[in-house]
Length: 217
Image (cartoon, one colour):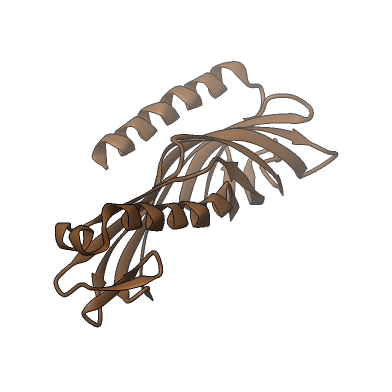
């Protein structure tokens, strides 16, 4: 985590220096919240209708749920850098294209709650057995979206809003304890993994919504 924060800070320093040296517009420091976590970034208008931004986003979210006879403790962890180009239509409304770079994953560990667990539609004895599941999104994901804000060229406080999608299919993996593999058979474990993969395939377009405040210097 410390390494990722260090990389983010170094990237911001280089990006900010580049903006200051090349842009005649004000430099914006912004921060907000959204479906990809806590956001902090730098940006600037670089032309009459264009802008450039860079941000870092961090999300660490935990949730518990029951599925197929097991209780799962899950985590959603994002740690990404984003680079975006904005095209403004008239005033604050804009189209945005860019990319997310870094780690985005969901993971969980499941333990049987009633002494059995269902794998690929069949219930097996599972006292003391467990299943781990993970879905990893690509480390590079194109982004397309719309929004308003990040348009101010004079000093002062402003509001922004973004809505878009990060494009890229996650890879799913299931790992079962040895006793459960022996009971269910590897072929059924593989079939359950395919079922999970089918579920995460629906997130090829990961929705992102975020809002926050910016200050132009």
